[in-house]
Image (cartoon, rainbow, N blue to C red; front, side, top):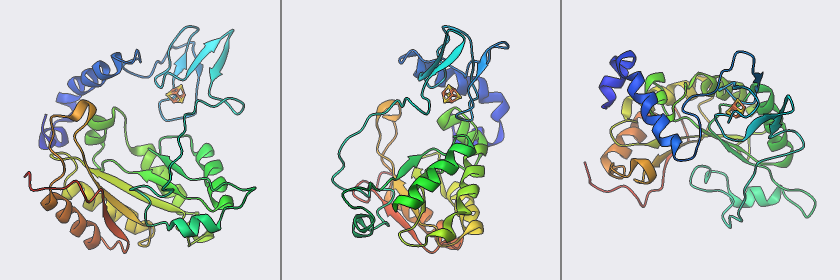
Amino acid sequence: MCLDYIRRHLEEVSSDIYEAHGKSREVFKLPARPPKAEDGISCHLCLNECRLLEGDVSYCGLRGVEGGKLVGASAELGNVSWYHDPLPTNCVADCVSPLQLAEAVDEHTSCICWETNGSMQPALLKQAAELSLDSGGCIKFDLKAWDEGLHIALCGVSNKRTFENFRLLAGYIERRLSPPFLVASTLLIPGYVDREEVSEIATFISSLDASIPYALLAFHPDFLMADLPATSLHHAQECLEAAKAAGLKRVRLGNIHLPGNNY
Ligand code: SF4
């Protein structure tokens, strides 16, 4: 399914898109769409707003209903995994200097950074923002696509909440300019996330604050998108130019070891 067709004829292709997402989720025993039982109990943690009955599996697979109550992730119980990353600023936020982060940390204090698709409930995002601001950490926000149909094709959900939440976070920037509190990134998926997508996203970021760092990340074919090539150098360069032309002052390419001359 090509980008132009998704952009122009979303209604015609949306059932195929949701079917493909449903198949990809089946492997993990996850429902194809967020459950919406009329008499279900609502979860408001993210944009999917599942309504669950006893025994239902939530869209994320992390929440359920037991004895008439929502269980799973809560203020007391998290679903987490972790690893020690010797480089505290990965490909998205390497504009944040490790030294700056180290200065924010002592033996009593951790530096709390988040990396998110931005689809959470705004009240939770505000709490995350306060934790990062207080601890010297940053929030790395994935802005995957500007076109809503393309976002649905890639992620299975709308991007409206993500852009609203990004706008909300931009309101916190003034409270700490260095190290940067908010960092944006976009993965340059060949054939899908093109110059036009990047230009629109960059224009949006720039309208909020042109100093927000923006990382354009080269794509590597993996998992269910193993049939695509890695991002080409030409593709990466034209997106970089588009982001700069939109007025952003801190744009850079990430995963620079990946791009080749595939297309
Ligand atoms: S956090 Fe999970 S259960 Fe809650 S709305 Fe989102 S997908 Fe559904």
